[in-house]
Image (spheres, rainbow, N blue to C red):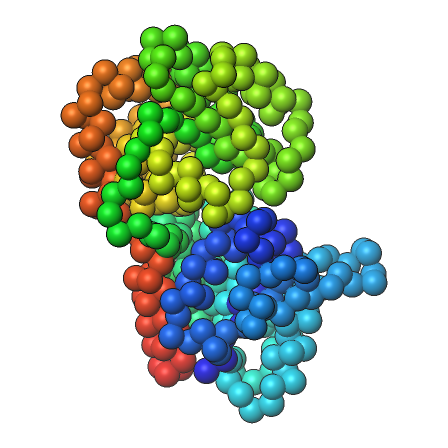
Length: 365
């Protein structure tokens, strides 16, 4: 079995710039029993993760050509050159590439699609007709949450048993609950839909009352680029104006972020939009962090009753819940304990489930 993973162009398969899709692919790859048979196709990089598995594709000389289509086309060439070898193709988050790849691939190769975002907002899966065509072309469709699965099947009665939920996996590095500092953090892109402004307003309400606590914002408007726009500059100004205990760190690589999260007591996930999965929530649970989050999208599937979920989230509701937690040590410890003990998204487990799907597909068809 040969497995070909296609990453979107914008996904940088490197430690310092990896976002959720790249991190999920890397985490699954680390524990896969098919590791030696996997090739990851993506935009060419100097420092890719898993160099032996990565196939870097340079941009086309034709600047008008789609960068995603260029990577897909080059991948198809490689696959077609492997004569008489049946292969599995895994397309991540680019449904519009399915038909193009289907038409270019020779032989009886298998094709699957991984949906990390709302399919009703992505090219190639906007309409019911688009999604019905995908069901006919694809051998399996993996959704990062039941929320995303329901979105894909909106208006579709028969999914042909092809649409399944496969949660993203996170690597838990500690064997025991790490020791905690009096620290509350926000982790994510500095954009309005993530609700970082709600976090800032909530911290304003509690900053003076809880003088022995520190507060951090980790992230930038665009992943891996420490360049601020007008909105993020205002966030930084308003937040750091509170005092020296409030700091906006900007982009932090995955290794440094793990260290920060391991010693953090509370995380706020104030998303205004429907998070497809909530990788930050899973990472928080892997570190035993007490979670205060919006109750939307895939987040309640990840957090369940192991954190505080807020309907129609706003800064007043966030600050109210933070005050309750900070004023009640036993409540804080209980939330941290629930988070740690009920973490269920270990990459080793998720990778094993994916491998079983691969095996079933390859030997069933």
